[in-house]
Image (cartoon, rainbow, N blue to C red; front, side):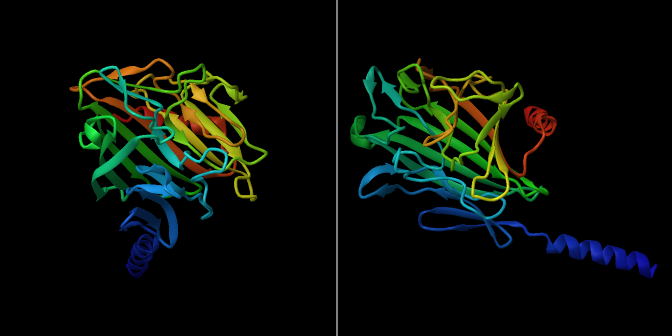
Length: 307
């Protein structure tokens, strides 16, 4: 009996000692931590550099599993890039352009609501309600697109962590269109501006992927591995959910001085409904070491089964 009691006491003690996800709301946004380690920061308020390139509604920093900052903000080669973000060049209402959300020109993001929820599996979810505005529409006072986004941060599991993004876009004005770059590249949508080491490698379910100037057709997930912080190899994987608009999406990939982007809708703008939102869903997986293709395929299948 004593041995059983001792066993359960040790088990309970071990569970209690496990670091838990927590958060701190600041004037600028939300810092998520796990134990003593920082996980990510969500930027709620508008941030600019010397009054230029104003942006909000994105993640930076995102930390790797060794506590190093993985993302970049205001990089010198593309000052408008910002951590983990979702943005588009083209926004139009009734045939009139409404600024450029990618380069942050004449656009603003009003994070009207921000709520953090603790889930039963001990993950945390940031629930966001964001109003897209432009000085070209009602002097920036009226919402053009209502974005509702959830960002679910999972607890670390051994050498990996999952972060889920569910982005919902609903037009508040009729005849609203959204699109990517108006050229053959067509980039725009969910984007990751991460540090790119010289040994960066891209891999999909179809094997090694070589970046091109234009979008690459390479399946439903993309793994990027290298020595991001001059340490041992680590990786970032992006999974795309089957219920995401445009599934399976092509990929814009760059091996230096840029971002990585599963593309939607591309260079041909899509009309946003005022009744049924467009849904974009992605999962980021941070992990140490180089993970096998079979492991990522297993992760992808598990994610695809989520409703």
